[in-house]
Length: 107
Image 1 (cartoon, helix red, strand yellow):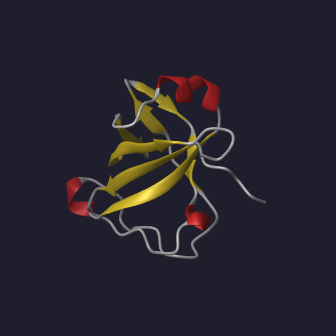
Image 2 (cartoon, rainbow, N blue to C red):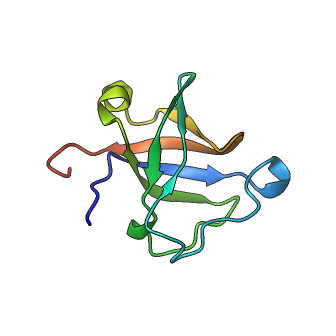
Image 3 (cartoon, rainbow, N blue to C red):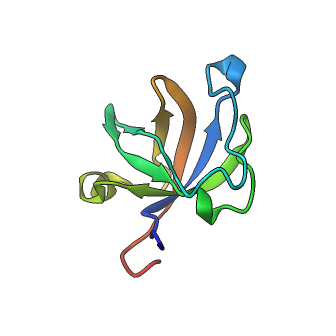
């Protein structure tokens, strides 16, 4: 099943010693990973679309990731390129910046 991302973002997952996850996301670990997206004090459910990536996501490195929001109408109209956000897994585990907002036609 093809899932169209809503945004592309530059994300840095914190190192374990910075309070991040105990491990990154190895290639082939699944199609998507659900992680709440924290923006302007609110959390929005999203998926990091791992199936689009042809690489491991290592902790501490900046990577470009496609993001799909479960309720895009609540968050997409508020986003602009350059906006900063965090990802949450019971604690903040990553910093990010919006690189591109993808419209319905795929641009």
